Length: 458
Image 1 (cartoon, helix red, strand yellow):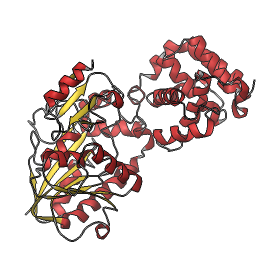
Image 2 (spheres, rainbow, N blue to C red):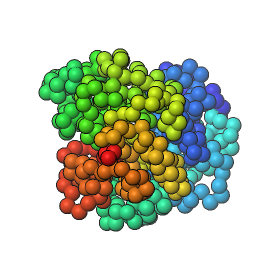
Image 3 (cartoon, rainbow, N blue to C red):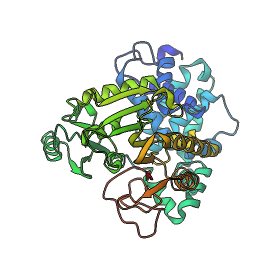
């Protein structure tokens, strides 16, 4: 069978989606992010006429993401079922096909049939079509035993590399499993109400009138009980609401901005925190972003929210090179949402643990330290800097701030709401902050994993 057997009609065939998903899987396992891998795989292998088909791209994303969320189990299953490593393209097709069998998204007959068709449709995998059929059927025969064995290991059960598991166990002890379990759950869809243009009560009523169940989970935060496409959310296009995790919504109010203050939002893309600062105070914000394309996205977001204008400047530059964006006048407030391991947002980005190496955390911590050192002279006396990372690793959070305070004179650590003097660690999907100070109390929001520390210049 050849390429002509792949779908040429309007509806994308499962075989087509498996072919493209396998290519995306190969790219991801080579170090590309999930989004980039999907984009390039669609360009390379989507059938003519379907490269812009949202149904095919959606199916490919679902299949690939399903495989990513089972990466550790798939590695084990492939080791048990495939005794002589085949061509990497065959391994990738087996991986995404096994993931779909595990997910139960299709009947077993349909999935195996379409996987074989997918194998036959490419010269690189055509010779292994019989092997694909045999491996998938062998899995189905031994499924119960293989799944039980696969999930007996905690790293496989929680879908993380062994080093990731060991780091969390070292830092959190018996609480590590609750952190890991939360990262397997579906991420909540949280909205932030633009308080300059609407009230929480108004938007909650609009959502319910549209048949969308929602609850308030923060001062300006609304939780949609079911994920919904943004274009279906009342008020999104009009700039009345934005999508932003409830934990991220803590940054702007905790920075303590006031009328007329000069604020630097470092590493500002995609612009959610910049917008929130402008929503809650008549301040002036310099939003600095290194990537020109992401800077354009910040500007677009501000226009949607009705916040573009003299109070906001979007600047392209490297935070470590302030001459490129700073005019020499010190800032009253600095928000540093630093690049990090993203270990607190794995449920939104399940590829993160598989793209990171142990050395990456140390390298990121070094860059974070350089950013703190670079930005501190830009802060005015009595000014405040809020340090934020979407990480649950102490090296990027509590230990990072402790080291900065030791080496930098003139720093006072301020206690955050519900937090200790070393900062506040929020764990994903938890109402409790952990690993800073004994006796800390709950933060009443539904959130991802973040670390916050508020510093004052004295």
